[in-house]
Each structure stands twice: as structure tokens, then as C-alpha cells.
Amino acid sequence: MSDAAVEIVAKGGAQGEGEEETLVVVARAVYEHPLAVRLCHWINTVALFVMVGSGLQIFRAFPSLGAKIPQKDLLHWPKAFAIGGWLGGALQWHLTFMWIYMATGIVYLVYEIFSGNYQQVLFTHRDIPGVWPMVKHYFFFGEKPPVREAYNPLQKQAYTAAIGLGVLSVFTGLAVWKPIQFSWLAWMMGGFHWARIWHFVVMWAILFFVLGHLVMVVLHGWENFVSMLTGWKKDPEY
Image (cartoon, rainbow, N blue to C red; front, side):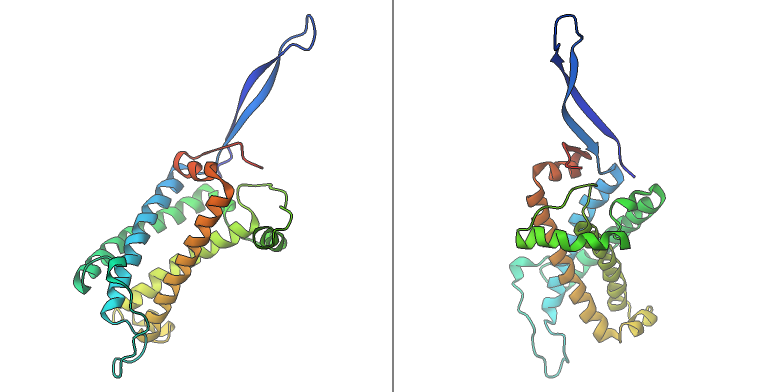
């Protein structure tokens, strides 16, 4: 778990004649995000962007979640907001970055488990009482609860859910990509048709998480963003 901290001090001057100068802490920084976490975060950001864009281009080839005959299109997604140009191109982008997405996810999970860093983001039963106070603070302008660690209970709940969504996106994607080879996965999801629906739903759930994540970054200030670049967070509240 990353808990290293440094303090920047300055001489505060002597209080009286003959007394030694005192040292005053003028800044404090905590090492919140280890290098492995930061690399996985930014690589997966790119991978997710490409996979969503190419996935929507794949969806454009058959923009329906119903039967092919008669086809009732669910959504006409603009080509300008998709990646790949056509079905074949989108599949190449999607399958290439699928491996990057999965490999990065595995590296992240292995690092979190063996380093113990998972304790920083994992939502547990101890965090349940703290969820509603944070909801009131964020959405109903309630009083801000005391900050005791890097992530508050609502953030932990969101990040833990995001990890679960990432795992689901892989399993549903494999069932859609190889429904014969992974027939047991497709069966668990209700068949190929339902696997495609679940994959689509999981994608939008991840996008809503990303939106909420970006809002939280803005609300928590610039230093919160910088910490994901350098690892260090200046003057944390906890």
C-alpha cells in the first residue's frame, strides 16, 4: 500500500533571544499512486477509448439488439464518433486493443493483490456507513464528512464496481467473439443474443463510470489529476 509521505519545512524564526529557530511545515505530499497503477491507468484509458469507438462502429453494422428479420434499429450512431471506418476495420482495432485491455487489467489486478495496494480502493462492509454521507455531500450539498484516507467510501464503491465491470466486459466480449469456443460463457449469459446485449449494457455502464470519474476529478481539484501523473499528491486532506 502506497503510504509514503514527505514534508517540506521552513525556518520559522526564533521566539525569543537565545532560543533556537523553529521549523514550520509549509507543504506535505503523499505518494498515492505507484508507477504500476499509473501505467495501467493511462494504458487502459487509451485502450478503452479505442475499444468503445471501434465497438460502436461494429454496432453500426447491425444497430439492433433484436431479430434480423424484421430488423428494428435501436440506435443510429454517428460514423464521426466511431473508429475503424467500416466493420472489418473496426474489428481489427477492437481485437488488437482487446489484448492490451486484458493484459493491462491482469497486470493491475496482480499488482494490487500482491502489493496490498488493493486495500486503498477495495469497497468493504466497513465502508457501507460512509456511503450515504458522501452521497448527501456530492448530490444534496450536505456537510462534507471528515477525510481519513485517499479514497472515500463512495469512491471505493465506484472503483470496485468498475473493476467488476471490466471483468464482465471481457467475459461478455469473449462470448460474443467466440460463441462456439466459449459456448459455456454464452450459455451462462443466456445465449449469444443475450451476451451481445450484456456486452452493450456493460459498455454504457463503464462510460457512465468514466463520466462520474471525470466529475470527481474536477471536484477534487488539479492536484488530484497531477497525482495520477507523478504519483505524488500535494497537501492531501487526510
